[in-house]
Length: 162
Ligand SMILES: [Cu+2]
Image (cartoon, protein in one colour):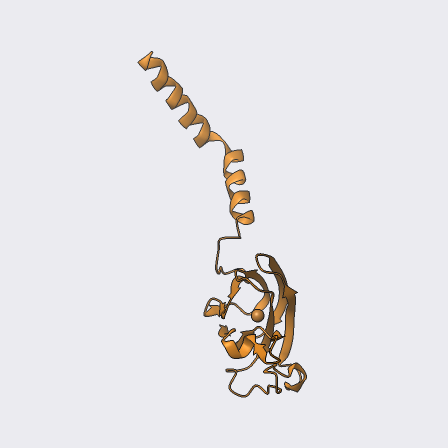
């Protein structure tokens, strides 16, 4: 009984080592398992949105960058990509909404349109080396007539593309 078990184990080990099919299968698994990665070297990053944060890796490689935006919050969010050293010079209107048309030509890169809490959206952007601000530009009007600007609540971060 015991000898049989050992032989079986050796047989399994040998077949695992000798099979190139197993190796290619393992590679496929890695390629599809991108959900848990926050950053890698292939131009894909994950950005997490919540109240009131935008969390992104500090750096990413230039080129065609696919941003997977995960809405981990309880509200609808969006993700705007603008080339800027920081948000210091951003123009906001009286509601706290950033004037997306106010950026110099070429600095407004694009956005992932608003998507619901608990969902994930992605977008691919051509990013040259430089510094970019990622922010949410949703403004909600409260029942009392005041405005809640997600950007002004802190939903912004800076990422360096190199
Ligand atoms: Cu938001």
